[in-house]
Structures are given as structure tokens and as C-alpha cells.
Image (cartoon, rainbow, N blue to C red):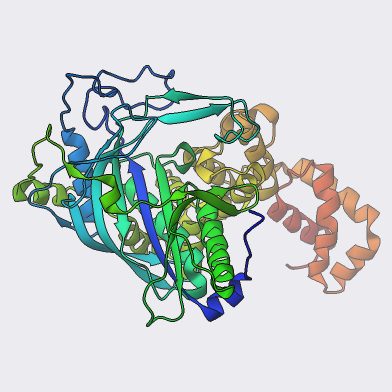
Length: 503
């Protein structure tokens, strides 16, 4: 936290002020090459190897628009219920970029590819907020600066900086909302849920890997406060490049509290960019926020306007996949989940693995049991997403089939799952190799039952007296004697036969 920041408790701030939110989301497109040249669009290549003279803006080079990037931008626009421009053009956005050698960014300004859309954002409890989209426009990414010699990895305190131009020119679509109002205390939740909804749409459209930890999706979060919903909009701050849902929530909470502190003291909020600090959830000042005229936009003279035909736009529209909201509604009906179960699975990122596990032969409820139970707990412990765990949906379905076929029980299944996660193989192979199958051999089970009955005459008396539920006290010793591998149902039958009681 900056020493000069006076923070008002979040609940107090939202009781006395009306928060207004705006979000600019940048998504890197998963094209094979960059936005304006043939350099490969790849992640984690050796620094300054995925470049061409066009990437570096060298004299005499000319850009050429990537047709696949235009297609992807149109797909995104259509999925966001936007109008697709009949003609649009690129512009030069000019200020000093140490990681764009041209010293300008090729972007779109007054003529974006898509405009005037909306998406509905559902929160964890089912409340829905509509977010209006002002525009979605195409542009290029900048390179990456690495600051060396300091303790924080930031420019302050560094001895020198290294520039990697590999990312320079990677295709981006920037999606800009209109002011999001009426969210009150739920503003942080709405912000995170909006970006999560976009991330899911990008993945469904297959236009980006949309991995936030890699910077494929980044959010610039704008926050302002006003006295009440009828008052004019307040001065906004813009926290740049926030790249996790948790960080987005923390950013909004901090900025609302910080703005309220300034306003309570009679001060004025400065229009500026800010940086988020993961370690304590605070933000700090970056630079004064430029207005559009400060960028000296003018049409890019080396690129002709982009004019997608209406036939092409409709062809793209007809090829759009099922979008996440429609998919959730369909799966809700197919799986028979409750609304709460579906929301929990969605919020946990479990829909894909559950659907794939069902496709591999498991029932929806059994797939949900594993992914929302044991596997969700493991993911939390490892601090990773579910799809990063070392287990496939096919392996989970195989594990459940072993249970359904009564070859293993739930306790053994959890042991087997641990071995799968440790990379020891598929469930069936592990059960076979380690002799973990349920013991259903009557001779073995009868011996274990006889011993348990002899050791617990008081329990036998209770069962014979009509308290059949007392059988539970005998199951533990029998399971211990069989290393937890006894067929519990058959054990119960044998006990009842031995004590001559009808179950």
C-alpha cells in the first residue's frame, strides 16, 4: 500500500458512493503469424528470434493485414452481439514505446471492426448483469521489457532493461465496455465475472488459448465514484494489465476504497494509469492518463481499409460454435444438475472435464463427484486449475467404471487416484499391478467375518437383538483385515447369515 493512500472500508465506500466500472480487455489471437507480417506467433521462443524486419519497423518495410486475425476479430464481435463494420481502417497511435521500435502502435481508433454489443454476466449466486460493449478493435501487441538488477523486477531500482521483440506485432483484439453502472457492492465480482465470461468465450471460439498467466488475456480496470446514480461520472483511474480474476477483484476493491478516501478528504481523483501489486492487493501511480487527442491518431497510410463482405460475415456467423451460456443451459438439462450444482461446476472450471468424463462413459453425477470433490481439493492444494492436474477425463471415467463393476470400492479408488496423479499409470493397470481389487472371495471374507464375530460378542448380541445397524461396528475390523479391499455388500450378507438374522 502506498503510504499516501487513505483507504475507506469497502462497505462504507459503497454505502456513500456509487461506483462505476469500465474494463478494457486485450486478447492475444492464436494465429500462426503476427498481425502485419509473417513472423511466427509463438510463446516462449528465444528472445528476439520470432521477428522479421516488419516486426521491427525497419525502413522500407510495409505491413500486410493478417486475414485470419480479421476473421477472429469478427468471430469475437459476433459472439459479443456487436455490429460488424462494413468498412474499417487502421490508425497510428503515437507515443514512446520502448518495446515497439516504430514508436507508434498500429491500432484502430474511430473505425473499429465491431461496435455496439453486449454480454450477460452471471455471478456465482445466479444474479445476471448486462455489460454493454462499446467497441472491439484490432491492433498489435508490444514487446516485453525485462528490468534487471533490482529486487522487484520493476524498472524502479533496476540497473538496466532488456527488450524482447518476439511479442511485438502479435495480433490483439481490444474490447472496451461502456460505463458499467448499478453494480454497487458487487462491482468487484462483476468485474471478475465479466473477464471470466470473455475468457470462456475466447476459448469456445478457439481464437486464443486465453491463458491469463501467460498474458494472453489482460484487463485494464477503470474505476470511478460519484455521489449517486444521478450524478455525473467521476474521474477514473485505470489499473493496467491485471491478469487474474482474483487480482481484478482486489484492484476494484482497492481503488473504490482509495477514491473514497480522496473524496472524503475533499481532494480530487487524478486521471492516471496505475499498477497492481499482487503481494498486498494495492495499486500505485503509473503515469498521467492520456486522452485520445494526446495520441495524435491518424489513419495508417500503409494499409487500405478492411471491408468484410456481408456474405463473409454471415458465413462466419453460421460457423460460430455453441457459446458458453447456451452450452451451460444445454448441459443443465442433459445432466440433471441443480442450478447450484451447475454454477459451482462452472465457477470451478469443471464443465470441460466433467463433459469429457461423461463422453468417456461415466455418469454426469459420478463425473461431478470426482471433479468437484477429490480433484478440486487436490487442485486447491497445488494452486492450479483443474485442467492442469495430471489426470485425464478418460482416466477418471475408467476409475469410476472400476467402481461400477465392483472391482474396487470408493476408498481404494481414492488411493488409485493418488497414484494416477503421481504419474504411475492408468487406474486399471494400477489396480492390476498392485493387487488392489476388491476381495470378493467368500473363503477369505468368511474367515475375516468369523474373526470379527469372535472378537465382538457384544456386537453380535445387539444384531441378534434386532439392532442390525450395529453391523457397522464389525465392518471396520474386517476392512482392516483385508487391507480395505473387502466387498462391503458381501461382508454384510455373510454377517447376517452367520448370526442368523434377516437383513
